[in-house]
Amino acid sequence: MENIMLIAPPAAGKGTQAELICKKYHIPHISTGDILRQVSQENSEIGNYVRETLASGKLVKDEITYQLIKNRLSLNDCKNGFLIDGFPRNLEQAIEYDKILKELGYDLGKVIYIHVARNTLEKRIVGRRMCKSCNTIYNINDPKQSPKVESVCDKCGGELYQRSDDNLEAFNTRFDTYEEKTEPIIKYYRDKKVLNKVDGESSIKVVFNRIDKIINN
Ligand code: AMP
Image (cartoon, rainbow, N blue to C red; front, side, top):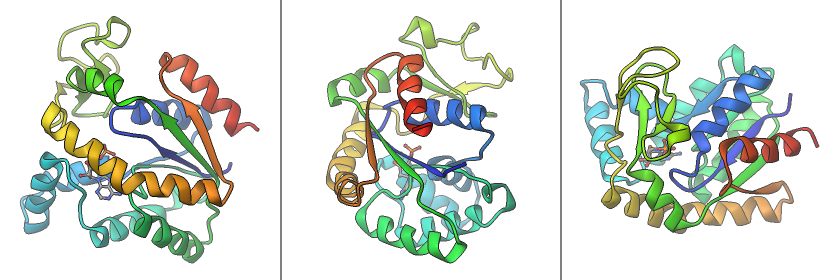
């Protein structure tokens, strides 16, 4: 199985698509956002720093993400393919990622870029809810993506919550950061001729089928 990298603006459905891909192909989902949200619960200096940074919508320091990613990718479950989501987030991280892959003996694999317009994302962000236990994502403003019981995860019964950065103010910071820092990596991978662009404005199923075609190509 080839490795997969997902690049997308905030609230583009990246996490949802990642879960579907990982389920179908039995590969681990490596999300720097999820890893950092876990770190943010620690009562330590780093935990406090990460918690404050996440809530502001800004990026966590590169060095912290490198260590977390290296540790995670070194685990055995990544040896037969993995999906990486949320990393790299800027050009420096993309260059460092090439080094990490080389060090660990992995290939870059397929880079998939999900494109969604900013005004669509703004509408989605305020309705997004996430399960505290299994990270499943819902949207209470979309009947097709709402949980059956309010605030309860359909899959595991866990409690749903709103991410501290899922408000318009933090979204605007995150989107501006994305445009400034992440768009150069789209060019980086386009120049390397490994970028696959997907229109992410359709339903979850349709977008998944588009991505699946690329994976099987
Ligand atoms: P996500 O769940 O991918 O939307 O990430 C949530 C937040 O985690 C981001 O807004 C950043 O604050 C932080 N984050 C995730 N990935 C990275 C990364 N590669 N570098 C720096 N910060 C990150």
